[in-house]
Length: 220
Image (cartoon, rainbow, N blue to C red):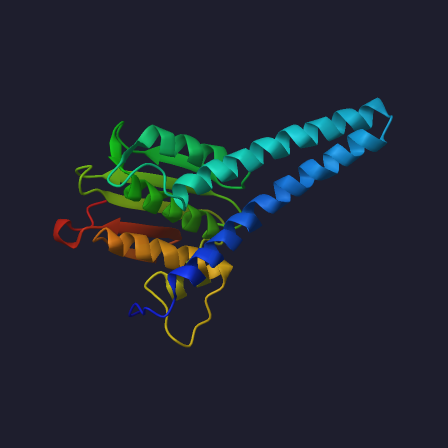
């Protein structure tokens, strides 16, 4: 697919904000419901259940916001590097509320913040590829100045997500970009801004999304 420039920065920002709001509205709503139960109920068992719901939902909302900050936000100054262990921690926090499990194979190192942004977005796509649950495996290989990033997803009915197939490489004029599709579109933009090629495919029953420098080969 040939990338087009028909999505304005303002439109893309609005779509990504909608995506973040969609992700956090459920746990925030659950917190509100729990607080209402605490205010209205006298039954100790109901209050204990409400407190458990509030605690779990608050942790989930916090994990989603921490993930979104690195995945979509501007963490650090221009040229800043981030610790891969921090990226792993926010990914593990997000996974605690999801059906998929995370496997992580990466060196203990710092890496450019935009590579972390790209990797976390690839993890989101990897999660979407196994909607019924499974394993999302992360691999970072090569020099940290020019890394190869790879996410493999295995699980029941693993497949290339429709939005990824349509928008990872850009947007054709006749395709409507909504908040759901904006994330894979954004992922492709980040990869190309770093000079990487990015590809999503099936290898047998395993979904693979990989970003690499063309002169360095795929190598994962």
